[in-house]
Length: 394
Image 1 (cartoon, helix red, strand yellow):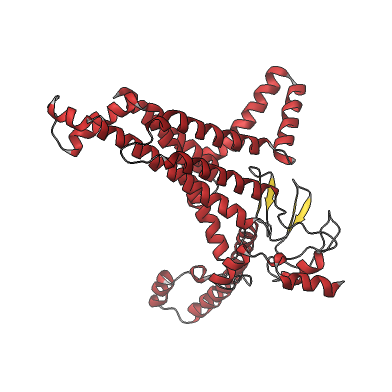
Image 2 (image 1 turned 180 degrees about the horizontal axis):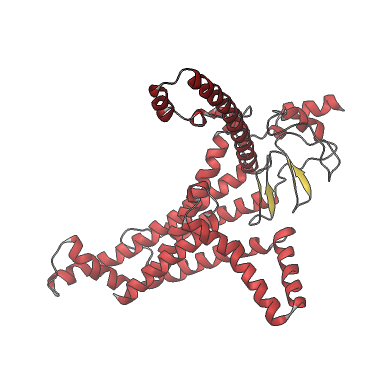
């Protein structure tokens, strides 16, 4: 069971590192050790590395590392796209080379050899759609249509000009510093796609996330059924109970079955763990973006709303505190004139006025469940009304 314990610890540690790296900034992990691990992985470790390089190799090597960082993080490059293609190709190769020899099996038919290849091909096709589709680039010849399609709410978006593109900046748009272009209904810049996620390709991005989650679940269940089939075909449970005298109960059989699987099919076990972890991460990422789509909000707007709400809360708290201070001063003056012991108790148990501070989020772009979904599936710039606006403006 030493190997099994080692693999279990390795899986848990891998899951912790991956979750911390990808999800450490989520609000649910704020103030937790996952957020601290995320900070170390994304900032702390790199800072220590730069200091080490500078101390050992000098400033020239430090500048070389910073140049590589600038290329990888601040400019469009296909590095993560290549990594994605390597990951999905090698994952499929390991599944095929280690598990296809057992298909057809007790639970799976031979068709799964072909459906698995088709599923991977569809995933790569969605990746190409998301990477290569125009995210909704705003130019001088279409800015008037986007201005008409997305009105300003004068809360988080107000009329202004893009300082880089020198054109009016429609509501919900943002100038991407990496791609150096304004993108309509900007969500975020995705390094894995080497492209911005915006108005025109959010639908493909969502399909990509959902399909790859289903692909990981399909691989996890398929490999699991292969192992279950091997248990049946080799009569492992029968051998354990009849020849080794182990009780035919779940808790007595599990340690021995797991030990046998880890000894005979450790590659398949690692594939199941890997696919399950990636699938859970994709499920969380898809769920987060699905929630945003259902409320017609983008990741960029989420941060803007958070800043606006924090500012409004501080402003209202300051106003309430000033009003409470004036009331307290007037109360003290009245108590001096008419002292009362009961007033002290009322002051002690009085509810803090800061607890009543409430800021309401008024998202004017949220027009209902069905309309929000329709805007993602059928972007405004692809509709005839958008094209008619262009004709009128010309």
